[in-house]
Image (cartoon, rainbow, N blue to C red):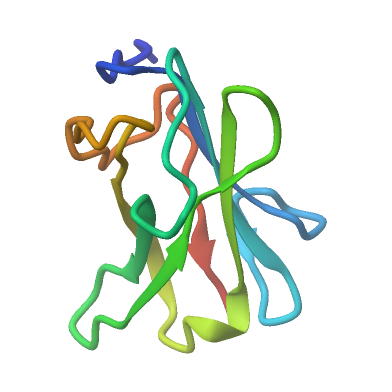
Amino acid sequence: MMALTVRGTSGVRIVSTGTNPLEAASTDEIRLIVDTYTRLDTGGASTVTFFTTNASSQTVVHPLAATGERTYEAKIPASDLSTHGPISFEVAAFDVDGNALPLITATTDGSAVVRGM
C-alpha cells in the first residue's frame, strides 16, 4: 500500500488498544496519533471528530492533546461509538500561530479500525 502525504504532518495513524489493533471492542480505546512538522495549538482549537460510517452514523468530538514535542493524540473509549462499523475521522488542527492545517481525513500508513461488537 502506498503511503499518503498529508501536508503539515509526518504521520497519521489510528489503532485500537485491544488485542486486535484493527477492531475496537466496547472495552477498548480508539487512538488517533498525528505527528507534525510544527507545534499545534492544544488549547482546544485542534480537535478530532470520530465517526462511524454506516447508515446510523454517530460522531464524537475530542480535543487533540500533545504527547510529545510534535506528536499529538486523541483517544476515546470505543463504547462512545455505540454504532458498529468502520471508524472515520476528521482532524481540524491549528498551529500555535492560529494557522489552519489542511483537514486531515486519512491515515498515512493505511491503518484502519472497525468498531466491532
